[in-house]
Structures are given as structure tokens and as C-alpha cells.
Length: 611
Image (tube, rainbow, N blue to C red; front, side, top):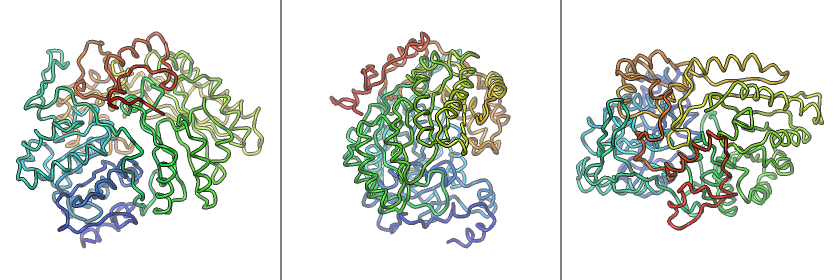
């Protein structure tokens, strides 16, 4: 450990975040590698270490001869203050080397309110923030993840984006980089060739024009870059790389457990859900593959809990078979098995009873809206009777802890829809009273309401977001009507939601806003204790932009979006059709019932979606 770091650590919260050396972390000899990759997660250690995608890519890169991937997390504000005072640059956990020593710095873009942390991490590492100021090939800054489906607000800072699944495109990119490094290529020559890799977007090779009203007039590729950058997918998940061990954290993290991924994609098509549209087409792993992967991770990491991860776990066709096999392995070893993302309309009491033998936790369902009409608008395809039936089964089985997730501010929402949220919670509490087998324990119903944010690449990308005043008014109304005993009502901060809405549908001009906000002291904007809407509004004003124009403006169907040259696999025409159906409250059947013709099948090159 560096003497400077050793001196700092006693003065900061949770020093274990910054020391590395965890079981399963990878160290290599510097002289034996020709590409050093810093995997940067723009949030604290506890959040980044919980992210499955980061764990997969960390293992994948380190499995390559000549490549060393190390982890870098955003230091909390106390650690940052100490580092700047001591002149200690941001470093990777495995080697302790500063970011400036790395060939490629890769950021994962999980949510828009982490963008200022990207700038802060680069600055702490001694890396120029603007892509145009990084002249050489070294310290190439790349990014991928959900927010890459609208990469435009970050184009000033990121050299290239990887769109879609990362496993294959990452190997193509690092292979080309090693060739460029050994061949003495210029950075520009490398970027021109990298733009020919399927799933790679190089923003410096595209020119954007604007109309007088501020909307995008056109995006023109240059130097042979493709007009449409289509996302990259892994077609066969059974043969895809998956680590047989995880780095075991040295302190508590958000999701401290082993995980296996059941499938990618979601058959449901909720119209607000970006992941449900951008992760298509549906691709599954076989029970045999999942069982082997799960057993390997558990044996090699020592975890006592494993989660079956997906966007819609209960839609996995072989779930009963898989869980039966896994429980045969887990129960004798006192390993608990968790099934997140269950739907109320497919709740299986027998399955859940066996799953909860090792540890009985609460159940979570997401009705999203308080009325059937609004659930049809958002294409939730969930009846109130389905939810109450699932709760009845659970309460009779001994559960007494239910979490319900809702949204407020959805398109076409009325006060009757908000009343419906309170009514559903009341019915769930009454359902417990009439079905419980253990009245002595009481029931706990927790209703959480987030604020709707219209996201790119979804049917609601045309919709106006509620203003801060509208959302605050609805939250106050909900507090007044949520009066049922044993029901706790939580709500998401509306200020962060409106900023998220402004950035989510932003264009390249917002790069100056993000830079200005960071200079004004904005970091960890997703954390309520540090978020300052006032600083962000000042940054927008200083750059001559209006956040309401981005967030609260209803778009015409004819408008060209800043991200229309980024392909998610789902056709824009399909998204338009879904938007029109939402105005008529007409649901679309799930993919297991009938193909909606979204276009994602074309990425399988002749194959079909399957779940």
C-alpha cells in the first residue's frame, strides 16, 4: 500500500472501498501484458461491485492473454477531498496505478445522474476531460451500457461507445487496439477503423445539424462511418463467456450474492421500459448451462445466496425444472435461492414455498399503475385480480411482507389513477386480514412510487414528462390519500427525476451543461444528500439551454431524435405504433403469445426469439 494512501485511509468512511486485495481479484505482471484496461464504474464501490455486467466483462478481459483489466470506482466525497489534498491520483484497485497508466478507460453508463462522476474520475486520474484534448492513442476513453442508447450528451468526453451486449464487441475492440498499438497507428486512424466494428459508435465521425427551433435537422457520417450504428448482441447465451468465480468484496455491498443470468430481453413490452425494448431479442440459457454456472460460482466464491437474474424471471420456461435442480444443490449447503422480477400473474406458491426454505424474505410485485385503463396504456398486461390472487396465495403460505411498485406521472394519468394506487394497497392489506395464517405477526405493505421518466428507444420517447410542480403536487396528493393501516408509502425524489428526464433525451449541446455542472461542484447526483437542482439549473442557464425543452416538451411523431442513428434493434415504426395504441389504451400481447413485429428478430440473422 502506498504510504500516502495508508496515511489517508484512517480519516475516511469505509476504507475497505479503496484497498483492493479481495479474494478473486486478478493481478498480472505488468511486463507480461500489452493492454491495460481500467473498468471504471462511476459510483461507489458498494454499487459497482453489485453490477453483474461489470463482473462478466472483468472476467472476460482477464481471461485473455496479454490483457489486464482492473477495477476503478468513484471515491466518496471524503476520500476525494483527501486525495486532492495529498496529490494522490485516482488509481485502480488491483495495481494501485493511476488512471494515466492505462491504455483504455472503460465506463459503464447505468444512469444519467452518474455523468458528472465520469468527468470527476477522469480529472482525479489526471486525464484530459475532452476527447479532442486526448491526442494520442493511450488513455482512450470508451463507454457502454443502457445510457449509450442516447450517447449524445457525453460525446464531448467519450472517444467511442459500444452499443448493446459487450462480450463480443469488447474483444473485437481490444483486439483492434492491440493491433493499433503495435502498429503505431494514430488515434484518428484507430477510430476510423473502430467505427467499422458492428456496435461501435465514434461520435467524432458524425456531424450534427440543428433547425432554428433547436431540434435535430440531420446527422451526417464521415470517413466511411455507418449511417446507422446497430447494437451488437450475443445470439447464443449458452456458449457466451460467463465467469466461474466473482471477486468477493471486502465490505458490505448492495447485492452481496452470486448471480446467474437466465435470459436477455423481456417478452412483456411495457411501453415505459427502456430495458424491455433495448435488450431484445429474447435469448435464453438452458437449465444445464445455468446449473453448471451457478454451482461453479458458488463453489469458487463461497457465497451463501444466489439470485436468478433477468428482467422477468417468472417468464423463464424451465423455471420449475431449474429451481428444483438448484435447490437440490443449495439446500444441503444452506444456500438460499432468490427469484427477483416475479410477476403477480405467474406467482407459483409451491415453487416459492420450496425456494424460501432456507431464508424467507418478502415478496415484491410491480402493478405500476392504479387502474386497468392506465395499465393498458403502459401495456402492463396485469389485472388487479392477478395481484390479489398472488397476495392471497402468499398470505396463506405465511408471508406477511409485500412490496408494491408504482409510477406517477405516466402519460394520460388522471387523479382517478392515483386514487387507484391507494385502493390497491387497501385491498392488499384487507387480503392479508382475510387470508393470513398468523395474525400475531401483522402485515407490512410498502408502496413505492417513482416518477415516470420518458426514455429514448421506447414508445413513450415522444411524451412530455410532468414538470417538477406537477410531480410534487401528485406526491402531496398521494400522501393525503394513503391512509390504510399497515401500509407505508414511499416516493422517489421528483427533482432528480426531472433532471434525469432532461438529460435522457439530450443532444450534444448538453455536453457543456454537464461540464459546467461538474465545475460548479456537482458529483454523485443520484445521491439525495449531494444533489443540487439549483446548480444544474444554473448550468443549463449558463449554456443557454432550457431543461424543460428537453424534459417537458411533447414531441411530434415526425421529429428526428438525437439518437435516431443508434439502433436498438426495435424499429422506430414499431415504437410509433405502440405509442398510438397507448393513446387508445390498447394493450399488445406479450411475445410468448404473439410476435409484435418489433424487428429485433433480424439481429439473430435468421433465428427466432425464444424464452
